Length: 138
Ligand code: CMP
Image (tube, rainbow, N blue to C red; front, top):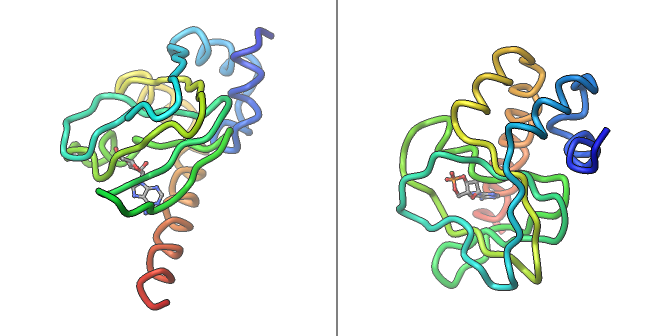
């Protein structure tokens, strides 16, 4: 398997995928490198892709407020793919970051073929909501 397929397989969201699916996912996703401090997605803008962090980290921000920090193996940009609304926050590279970028059609294609992906995304979205609720009451 090539490196991108291996890195995608290490991300929890794709952990259950067969080698064949990982290879086809690697083929249909684009790998982009972002220099430190790049705003990868911008709050309020429309979007057609989600991102899986292959290396480095990213911060989720709303204005000056940091909502979360995401590391290699985690994903972002899924909310816009699910509800079609504008980006809910900025996501900014902390140091250099490399991401696999999946567009809406690639994402839904693979999610329909492999519904466990949706299960992992829902699990992670529930975890983020719990964290956000906790932060509200702290
Ligand atoms: P999206 O709205 O498409 O673009 C911004 C992304 O930031 C969003 O998808 C999520 O992936 C991520 N995000 C938004 N809010 C939070 C949060 N509270 N915790 C972690 N990630 C978030």
